[in-house]
Image 1 (tube, rainbow, N blue to C red):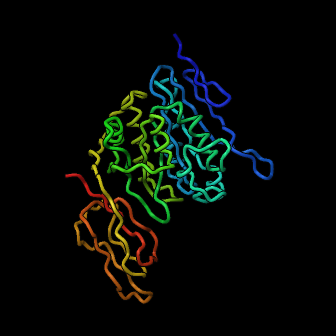
Image 2: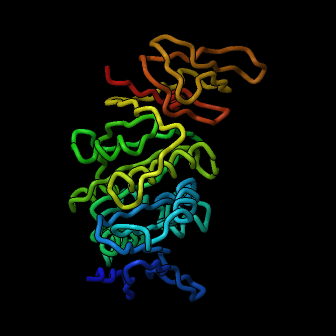
Image 3: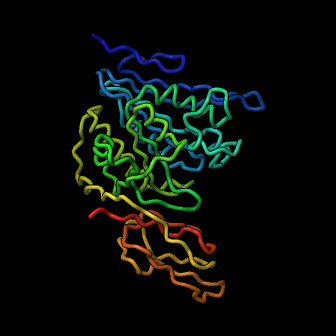
Length: 319
């Protein structure tokens, strides 16, 4: 018996087919319509329904390229289950080059949203009703923000066995047990019963190849783990993810020009030198030292910092 078609927005996608559509968001002052771009790959055989989205923040474009490359490798006639891809969730933010929406709201603090709320709330509601509500697993792709770059990592509720299983399957260098923030897509989706992984990797407004590759491979491994696509034998399977339960930022204790020595993925010990701060003539004002033992999972790329600014993100591996 053939698989039923998949309903989303005003269309139905037949089994073994892919369909692009736009879900209406708003209308610009010029009269032009703005829609949420979505591609549905509806496999021939039954299986999980999964979504993957990117650009929840308008300056985080690594995930857009991740989804483009991922979709190029998938054929719905060879798939089991259904994949909903939302490459640009914050359409207006990407168009204007801004992290937030024109109403200055953070989309990732606006879930589950409302059909009659602010612009951010309406986009969140659209995502929840047309995408998340149909899915059992989701992958939310992010990058560092505010001139920060992140080591490829999965942030998730590692106390949930199913979530932990999929986080491990992703195979990022680090999987970090992260609390759920109210108003986030991850929080709202979990409240509806979905299993959600949040990927972080790279820097805002950059196509960092190493972050893109890690995410494409990781999402593919999750689809394999779910039985949606056939497993591909990798020439060099990734090392098991380092599990971390706590993390924190080392902060500058002086204002100055920052010269960081610490590299992403580096293991450091409490007291190790991470870099230095100098004045405009190059005189060293203060050394930056690790305040704990851990793994460098994020760092600022800002050349000038003020006292109190976050400069290096350290995560503590589990014994």
